[in-house]
Image (tube, rainbow, N blue to C red):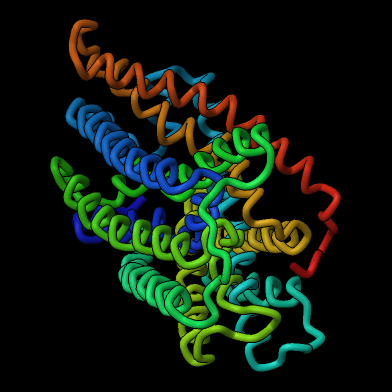
Length: 425
């Protein structure tokens, strides 16, 4: 792990790891929660994750000061909770989240490529899995970038890309909302019977939780050159400036423009019966920015996966660029991308996938474990505000995990009749 980055670099890495194409689903999450629920949870999730990531950073700084700098999430779990928790819970959980993001990258990129293709050839023969395969090929090349720190320039570009396409989506939603193409009966009421509304609420919570997720805070802080104190907070401030700028503008403008007809990805609302509702060049530009940024996000989340596989197959006695280590590294990285691309092509159901990841992975890793790590590391007084605040957040989030998991699995069961392997959605 290379520890020579600045706090600026950590800001780029954090932004790319959190602000990604998942923000395209935020207007849809509002259709499940309504105006009040959507805005309230979007705000609470922002405040809670900013707080929890700072707690994680404080714990990492504390252990570094004691001479045990922790470079990975599983290192924290091993030192604080014990080796069993690291091996059988935190490690696999983080791996699942990171590999899930790697699966999502070619899927989102494929959707953007298909969107561009349909703009110019509405009745063309190419299917979604063709475009996912193309994006998987691009990811295969980018996966060979050697380290997290090597991504700093790519992630700076990624920061500007997500702000740019976030602005494009906001402008496009406002334009359509004021045009003759706006929905004739715009409604903001929740759809379906009360039981569907209740489970939909928790699905929406899971989707927004996924949007704020960053399961690689320790890995990002490990790229910062010592002394680390205070640097991660500055990086988080950069990241959350971008979050506030993009998440709120996209979700509010998209939901305002389309109401409860906002689809799983807001870009789907920008076309009606295969006809674009915005200038073709504008949609081309927006999708191109999304495509490029999706590739950057994918490569960021490949890093923990790469490291885990290389630790298993590399020979530490040989040089990093020796044939003995280069060949397994090339094969393991390529194989992980190929598997992710095949899974993305087989199961291209973006919204349901996000809800599952949010419930089972992102809420435990980002809303619960930071509170537990802090309380166990610093042992604040049981009469202190911070102890009870952390305990409340962890307990409430644990309830959300249970209910959100039930809601997301229920939604998959309900949608199962529309599922088909290699579907052209």
